[in-house]
Image (cartoon, one colour):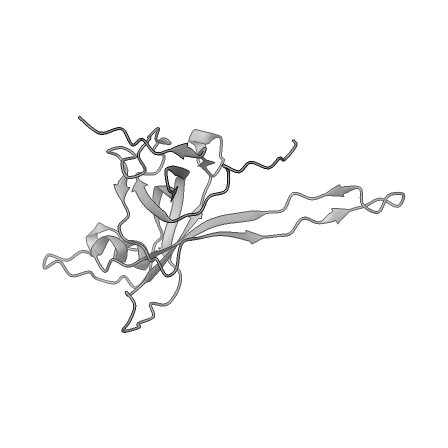
Length: 192
């Protein structure tokens, strides 16, 4: 593999979108970052102050050697990948993910009952980074979502509910975690 300078490959994530679907939902084929398909439901507004974070936690590679050669091989570390989303919508959908509750937590009067024991919610997740006329999708068919940080209040900022999604393997892609798409031009063709 030879790396070269590609002036079209850098991405400045000026705008972005998150979508959710049932676990195992196939990777969408789309040309408009706001319309990935009917199966994908928009996650809603997320913070512009605290953009999403793609996390990596786990072991660092370890170098093993022999008596004759001190640096013979490097181990394959156990790594967990995640995405942190900061929702600014105070509604039942956000509360279900943040507090780890199913649809039964929504009461008849519309209020939300916080469970004593949270259960991560699993979904397929699609994150779309938009840079001008281009977009870059990240698709993961199996993501475990739950609240991750305290909800801090500030009279000058929107309330943020930090939700971390841990990418899990899925059988539809041989146990892999997901796919980065290719940098694609937004379809700007006027509709019918």
